[in-house]
Amino acid sequence: MPGSLCDVLPAVGTLLGAPGAVDELGLVGWIGGADQLDRVALVLVDGLGWHLLPELAGSAPLLAAVLAGQTGRLTELACTFPSTTPTSLVSLGTGARPGEHGILGFTLNVPGTDRVLNHILWRDDPPHAEWQPLPTWFGRLNNAGVSARAVLPAAFMGSGLTDAAYRGAEFRPIQPADDNARKVAEELKAAPGLVYGYTAALDTAAHAFGIGSSQWHEAAARVDALLSRLVEALPPSAALLVTADHGGFNAPPDARVDLDTDPRLAAGVRVVAGEPRVRYLHTEPGATADVQAAWTEVLTGKADVYSRDQAVASGMFGPVKPAHLARIGDVVVVCTGDAAVLATGHEPPETARLIGFHGAATPAEMAIPLIAFKSPATTD
Image (cartoon, rainbow, N blue to C red; front, side, top):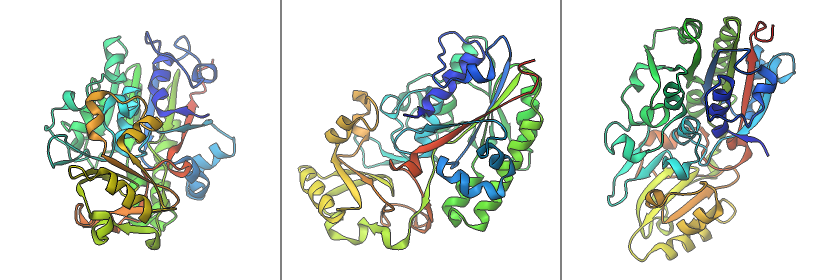
């Protein structure tokens, strides 16, 4: 079984000598421990799925060299479920699975209301520490005297998701016109510790134009150039780690189902959350069994349909804290194959226009890389 995205920051903590950190990924054996390096850059490339690496290699010379075994160390990991950005970022930051940290999807129903919280747009309500109560490894490292800095877009500052995923980090905000690679490299050279960076370019192109499109390949080239510059800029006794939050695929038009145009699917549903590959259906009182039966019949061969209890018992979310249970739908719909469940009456119209999707449990969505580069001076 591959390692988990949850294991990345504990492994970084081990590299940097933080107490209580455990390296489940074997990084110390390849890179060296705290006696050989004192700084690590970690870059998360949104949408850089394991299964996408061969397709983007033609536009990404560094990643092509990694695939060929010519540089770096490539390991397969798995993200947490659902395979969606908010969930994965918080699993990375906390080292915990979604059932523990509570960010169980792209959007979630706020229990006791009909409100749907979009985690990308989340600001102050619900309160950050109530909705996601766990500490992060950024805070744990800083509390242990190991500097942990996050180079992130200024627009992310103060958001609920930023706090949930990076709570306790020293933030280094950047503007759209700033040079992301330069800022990460400067932070890495300035002081020992962890420097975290993030880029959304590849995922944005996948959603809007499709995986394999010219725009997606152009984004891959830009990401590869960013990573190449960071490898070249590695100071002595430093390492660069690259990982992702999920993979993805293109959902064809004939594989899409719209719950808001099919009365069989809309009946008995009070609130719709999740996203097109994983739907959380909160039902009208007494309607759960009928909703589950109807969705099972209509989506046979396209999705697995669970009650909340069945979904939790399957272990897909990891152990679920009682306080987080109501965030999961009364009915949970997990798409299989290349299906997607649209909700045109509940979501912005641009969602239905997306080409690239992710969120469910297929290998194309869940498998992600961990690529390690070390400075030539690290083992001197």
